[in-house]
Amino acid sequence: MRRIRRRVTALDTTGAIVLKDAIAKLEHHHITVLMSGLRDDHRRRLTAIGALPSGGARHIFEHTPDAIAHARNCLPRPVGDARQ
Image 1 (cartoon, one colour):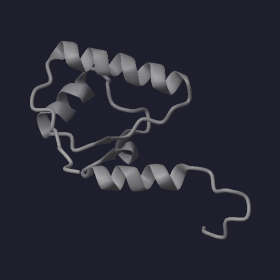
Image 2 (cartoon, rainbow, N blue to C red; image 1 turned 180 degrees about the vertical axis):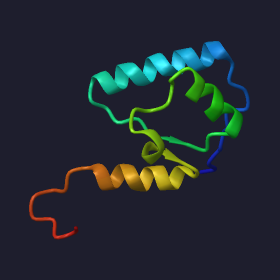
Image 3 (spheres, helix red, strand yellow; image 1 turned 90 degrees about the horizontal axis):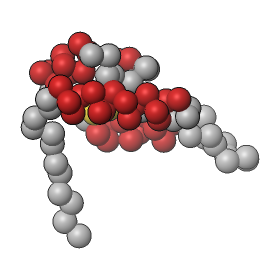
């Protein structure tokens, strides 16, 4: 199966506001939001309107695999799991 990678190439103010609302709703339900691959111009726009995850820089990753690894490390371990 071929994996298709898609990047957001444009983010206008309306899209940023919708994203801000979605993040707020998820975090209200205690769902951690992680972001990856933010372009500098998108990061500036999201910062300007307060649309970044509440975890700040520690919830923003340069690469998606890093965000996935972080998410996995945040999951509770099954009882008896010897991993630390």
